[in-house]
Length: 417
Image 1 (cartoon, rainbow, N blue to C red):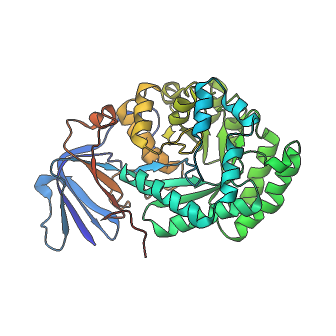
Image 2: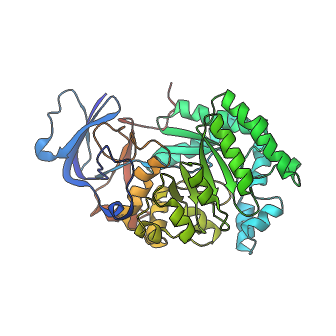
Image 3: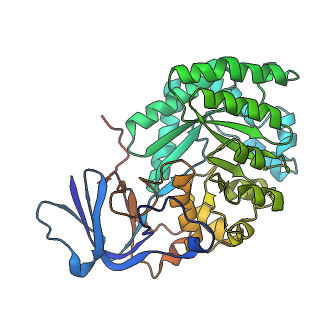
């Protein structure tokens, strides 16, 4: 299919194709063209520019943007959107003063989701997850990472990952899968954490690799969860089996997970609510992407990560939703951008780049996704006419997105094939 988008008020998020991430002050520089057009063919962007250079419409499917803006699709690099049921009772527990850790000690949290997932079929999980996929696509997401971690047994972890594989095969979004068997210690291993780590390394990871189900391996390296030594062992075993490292780090305490992630060549370290000079120093000069999840800090009522300091120190920063039933029950990346602006003191332009190109870098896919550039996959969305790119973040609950395009075609939410 050949696509021509005309009458674009502004194309925002133009970054040269050879830039795989933006860092420091360059995150606040918005590449834009006003009164523009864009073309795509066979799913990739073939051209764009000011209206004076617009090609003839012959042979193209023409889309009239009607003066609205065109943005690159979001690349949400951290989600848990395959799950069963919901956890609103824990929402009430938080309102009544219980902490995340107290809820977990009472059998809630991740173990609650694991119980529910065990009882759900693959078909039920797929149907529920597809509703969430359609939701995030309508809200502008075109690439998404999905983690396991609510199985906590070999059989149930594989069940989750097979559902993610099915999603990957049936939607036009770019999907990446992460094995997170070390999300918590399973109920039947409580008090025997070392034995559970053995299970992850010696049974779960080889089974996942045998079916080719995961791109990445992740560990919840934090106070009350997995230690540095356990995390290192799991990451190295995953690497032996072809899975690159990611880490949940420093959500609850200064765990050392950031430094370990850099040492182990992790693609990203995520959360980072507890981060100071040592963490920033470790990240400086590395290729590990600090990925911030302000939706979780907002929902849990905990401190936000120091994004402003990270950017001032020259780091690249990514934003992701952490879409999950317990600590961030939303995949709305506009809300994430708004939280980044209001709570992390990031500018709307910094937030846009963090949610698009740098999010793609946190998935290892920024050569093909995350910005408007010739040759990149044609994932973008259109808005109704708005006064400025900043308005998109400012008016964060106003329904501004009118149409979403994935791989150069408008997607109506139906599975492929």
